[in-house]
Length: 323
Image (cartoon, rainbow, N blue to C red):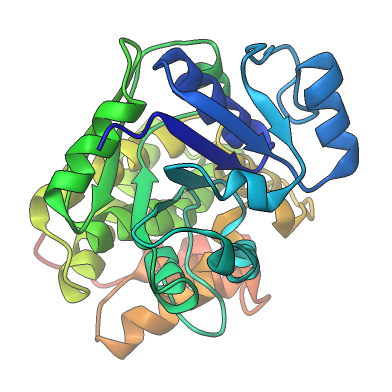
C-alpha cells in the first residue's frame, strides 16, 4: 500500500494546502473543485480564491469530474462538516472497495449527532473511514512550514501506510487507530476557541485566557472519555495541540468569530464550524451527563438565550470546587 495517486476533494484554503503537501510528498495529485469560478482560478492561475498568494504545483491536476477523482487510491474529503454527507453519498458509487476516505473536516453533523467517520461508514460502507486532524493552518502548510497532525484509521497497517504517503520533511502525520478520539478533539476545540475569542475580544487578560484554555481542555477530556476516546489522544496533537493553536490566534476562524461576538458584531456562522457544533456538542454531553459549562455558555450565546456578559457571569459565579 503506497498510495501513489491521491485525490483531494475541495479547493478551498485547506484543500489546496493539502494538495500541495501531497505533491511535495511525491504523490500524483488530483484536486477536485465543485465551484466553477474557483476551479477556473485553480486551473488557469494555479491559485485558490480562498488562499491567495499560494501557487499550486503545475503537476497537480485540477479536475471537475468526480468520477475521475474517485479513481485515486486515497481520497481526502476537504469539505465543510455539514456538507460531508452530501459529498460522500455522491462519491460512494464511484469508489473502489477499501478506498480510504479521509475526512479533513472538524465537526459533528447537526440533527444526527454523527461524526464524520460515522457518515462515511453509513453512506459509503465499502470504503475505509479515516480522519486527519491536528494543529494546522492552511497558509502554514501551503508555505511548507513545519506542521504535525494526526491521521487515524481503524486499521493500524492502513493508518501507517497513509501517514507515510502524506508525510514529508515539513508535514508530519502521526498515525493512530483512535478515530473517535481524533474526531472529538477536532470538533470540541472549535467551540472552545469561540470562548477564547470572547475572552480576547473583551480584553479579559492573559490569565483569563490561560484559565479558559485549561478548563476547556478538562471539558474536552471529560467528553472524550464518555465517548470512548483514548486519554493519550486527548493529550496529543488532535486534542491538546489543536486546542492550544485555535485558542491563541485570530488566524483561527472560530477564535475570530468569538472576538466579533465579544465586540457586539454579528459574524456569519458560515465562517466558524464551532457555531454549528456547539448545540450538538451540548446535546451529546447532556446525554452522557458530562459537565461542560464553557461549551454550554457558548451554545446559550449562539441560541440568544444569554448575551456575552451573562455568559461570562455564569462562568465566574459557579460554585468554587476542587480541581
